[in-house]
Image (tube, one colour):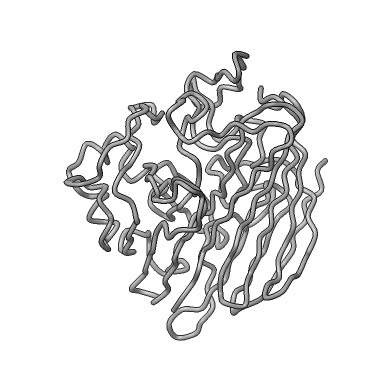
Length: 337
């Protein structure tokens, strides 16, 4: 039976608890405008409950996040069949993926930060993905009230790699019934639409004139409750990949979120070319850490990533990784009150 461990880190006015199961961020405490600490991430009470839930709460996601159409892809002329765990498609790496792996986990510190180092060796052909993929992830709490996530990976065989973290945030720390009154701004003029199966179509469209235009602060509720087919097709909320303006992989602002109830704010910066804004549309009958039942829109995710179904979309930013190359990615969650 797997042994579940946790580590607690405190720094910069923040406190974090990390599990070796799934690399899950189980708790993240941040102060509100009055200085009162509150846990701003959704989660479960016990490791066993985390193992049962299907919502990827707080987990590291890989080897290739989001959906891969038809549970297959080709790389350099070689075809690979993947685990189909979402209808005919592969979601977040398949059923045997990073989100339910036991990671090696150690505390670590550096100049201006304290954190956790996680390591996992994904074996060749796990869920159908080629190559032994050696992955290291750092969760760092900085002196400046930031959670920095740094990813690195290398392979011994050509493969695909697209990693993210699937934490659901609730900046009210459970004081509100949902996150619909949070305000959000996403620094993006384009998105990659998906079909009814939520698989990317391959198009890149403008957000202008649509409910997806979040270039100015908007209450999440206004979009979710709008009579928009874009919301209906995403199962009653946001579940869309936004294109970010950083073709050179520089660190750019992806989003800013503010909760007027608590006064907490969160800025997201990333080196990734996309961010998936997801409002927890599929959450149902989730018993949270306090024992309370939670449903749709209990939390929101901002999953920084390469674009969905990139292994099958040659014109999307590539997720191919070759021996001798280093996959690197960084995302910063910066908190304010």
